[in-house]
Image 1 (tube, rainbow, N blue to C red):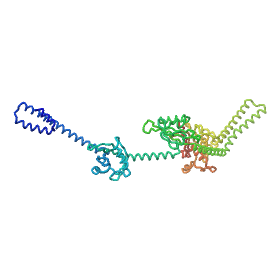
Image 2: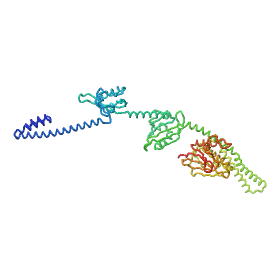
Image 3: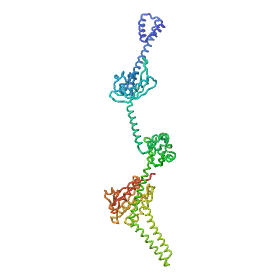
Image 4: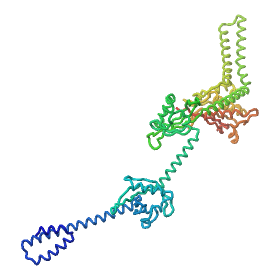
Length: 555
């Protein structure tokens, strides 16, 4: 009997079994407590306990299921992306709160409505093609669309969809994620616009611009750079510096490129043969790209064609040399009386000593030693006159010179030796101060000597109006705080008014009755051509200080 009851119990639900057990328990009270009846009662009690435990487990599972469903609903609704499902006609079956917020409406006004309501009109074909592709494919389908929100805002979106199936009727539907790309597209378009603008700017520049990465390969080149190396097959981007520049040029420039790739900014001039254009001269700057770290990512290459500039500079320099030569000849013309007086002394001495030798030889009474001394004096005076003439000849020569590393102290001394006659004739006390171990400077020796000569002569002439006992000329060389070599020339003359000092280096301005006003203007042109500075200031001895500087030679 117990087996029969057990088989019937297996076919009942938990609630039916509980009800049946309770009925049996109430009926058992009317039976005698025989052994068979006790067994049945015991089995029923066991089944009741098991069923109550199962019911408790079911209730707990139901609670957990409801909690999981609520958690899933929260995750679905408050996810940072928009979730949406469509049927095969594009009707919205469901949408999360993020998606509803994106469309600018509440969920109740969105579900069961066609998605095309929010689509931009010219995007309808794209959407239905996307929907069809999704429903006929097992892979994710992605498309770019534009929608208009309820408040009229136009948004760029990316929709990613996969196919799913309803459990009720096995029909397919589309499950999608919508991402707002409006800001990303705006940034992307700005980057494209900026890149285009940068391309237009760099292409319009007459400078060769390129970017070479750490492996010495070209990642960018502007139009001018590409056209300059137009003989290169298959373009420049991706090509190495060795391939683009050529073996001979790379042998010279490669060292500079490696130096830039080690983190040093490099400047240098080079000569490149460029196709039919022949040899051209370029000023090159290599700037390492290591702004935010010590690691060098690459090098920005800036190459400027200085061929025409060098030609113009050569013409300007020739003109400057001609003007300076004229100025030297003019200065010598002004100094002709002093020069004649300087030469007259050794010539007169030569005449006296030679006449004495002649008389001693004619009388036959002259001592050999006296004759030899007179002849030595003649030689000394002749050398003295010859030195004056040589200095003058060298100064007024019109040689083609070039810039070399010079010692400015030596140049100052040379110019003062040339003006030794002038200094004495003006009765000026000369005070010199030379900086020890003064660094070299790159300059044209003759032109800078011309500057020193003109400035010193100007200072000497400025003191003609004061008493001879008060005439003091100070010449000083130094390295100033700006790391420039500086020459200061102080005179103790009457000085100049401030309005005159400001324009003292202008052309055709002179304070002398017979002056042309070109000497100081020539000095300014020469110093400007050497990338130096020249100016005048009042000094503490009552006169004017003339200053000029020259840049140091970079080691």
